[in-house]
Length: 172
Ligand code: 5GP
Image (cartoon, rainbow, N blue to C red; front, top):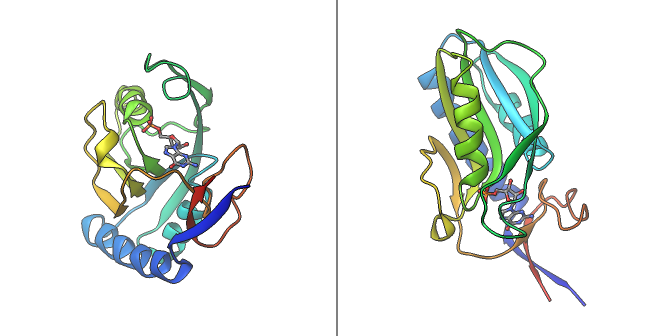
């Protein structure tokens, strides 16, 4: 049977998001900033980050399916849902739940860069730097964590656990 152990409490997550939002406000004082959430894991982080920011934001979502992790590390990534708008000439922050191998984000950054945004940055709630295979420059990191499999606050295991308030380690 699986057990859950709290790694990051909802209170710690909330406090850290306020700090990230303050940094983004400083970096982009006028806005609007497009926050591009990667479905589905980033949904709660995106919602809380946008509400903590003072800089006006616009919300977009993008869907990605990655074959790189579960099978071989082929790095094959595919867009399953595209943006609804053009981001040309806008400041854009891609909002991700967790950066692991870096394959997903390095692919997505290439795709989005071709659309000529004014600036393109990355915000991730969690970062597992030990597992990196592709280098990605992450501008706003909530927490660096060791190589645990975590769930909650948007992160799932087979679609379960996304609605947990804390980020938890899933143990067998
Ligand atoms: P990357 O391309 O960086 O290897 O993959 C990032 C994606 O892998 C994340 O968006 C997430 O969907 C998934 N992932 C990586 N580590 C974890 C983890 O510890 N827990 C969960 N639930 N998903 C993870």
